[in-house]
Length: 96
Image 1: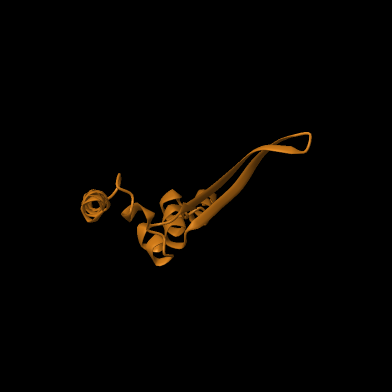
Image 2: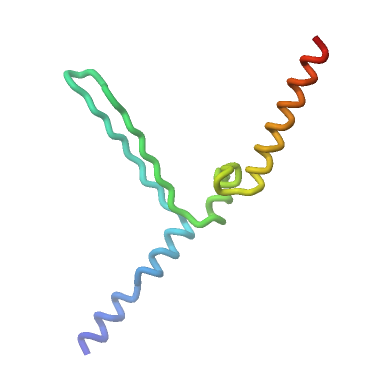
């Protein structure tokens, strides 16, 4: 009987915790500083956000949509942008 009660108390498993974290989101932040004699040599800022894609989009975070390594649309836009810049330079040289 004691085992049944223990099991009921520990009903939250890893999948439940992961679902809650992805639904709500979690931010982990920290800074690492290296100093010698009160002279700052290096500062590393670490920011980690764990959330579902839907939650991230809801918060206005969508960097993966503009990353050409993760989004084919972003890659296409980069190629189009490069072509337009080349045409603009050609037009500038003709006008001069």
